[in-house]
Image (tube, rainbow, N blue to C red; front, side, top):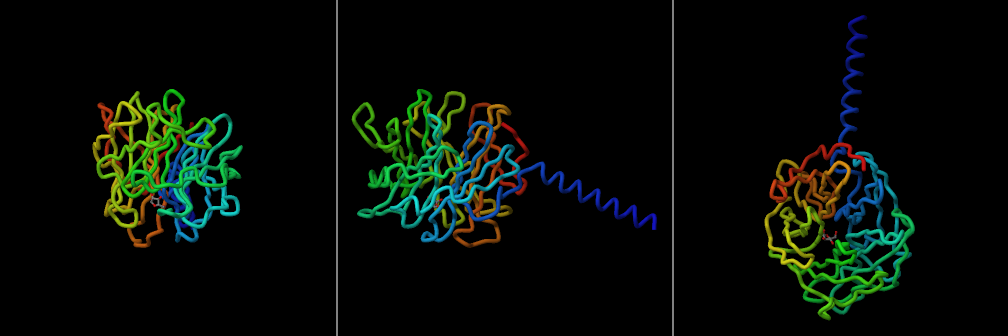
Length: 323
Ligand code: FUB
């Protein structure tokens, strides 16, 4: 009897320690459900992730978002905006990009998988809270035309060192940068009068992202096809937000032991711990379903010269890291 009790106690202790250690890392995926194109951002002491709801185009009519204090425990905020608010949305609500300005939260998004002559493109919504509810700011696209061959999707809004807001965007293998007006209601000309500058790097397909580290501009993007296994993330380092963006290397790609179709990412930085994280989507190794894309996280490492080291995809994710 004594031995049985001892065995039971040992088993309980082992279970407790497994669950305690499981809580020490985020695990991958970070949360349940098919979510792609995750845009991570820090607002105050909270991490936020704004992803695409990954489903058939006709069913992509809303966004959910997620928040966390420590990267491990995530809270879902359902339906932060949907088709009842964006009157011109028909389908394919894609790749949100959030930014805070003057106490308001702005959510840029792509809608309708727009082609020449159709209504759709990049829109913008605003809220008093990062979890919404977001209101369509314009009631129409901010950019609805196809310029330099770039489909108006996959925008990333970047605040430069001098406070200027630029928006990088583009699908179909072309990337443009535009300058946003102070109220985010329009785009304004660059000093040379141009409205759109093409900054497409070699092999670029979609999903641009930018961050500054130690004074350098890290420009990143996705290559390959998002529906297949060969999706990947590459990057360049530049001295200016306009490039030139000379492709350095691929840093994230499929791993036959872990997952395929890894790409469309973002990067968050914790200024307190100094750590950088890449948040990206991938398709589980045992899945061939196009929309079975899940949101994952890994720590991003740099070498002494500032180059980004290849990302190792894991099932464990990252450890707790409070802001
Ligand atoms: O999720 C919809 C589309 O898939 C995105 O806009 C692309 O970047 C690709 O990830």
